[in-house]
Image (cartoon, rainbow, N blue to C red):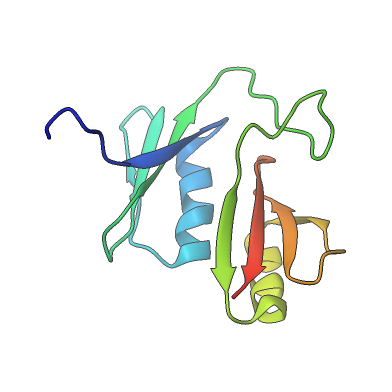
Length: 122
């Protein structure tokens, strides 16, 4: 059994790990991130247990371009919300950018450094 991995977390490349961890901390209302002294890595842990979100500094970071394939999104998060409109207003205030609001059951956003993510009505 020790050879079977468990899902630990998702790591995002970014220009400033502490800042991006702060965005997701506010969005999810999790505890303060753990930031490496050199700010090259930051970790957010779900206080209820589960996965970690991790952020690593990348020199010359280039944001994904959605929906273009010139610089594809590579991966994204789906975040479930019971009130899509209220969540929409909240995350715009936190610094997210709306990319697509045409679907009825979800909306596509970018975090402050361009990673796409969705708010999904549940």
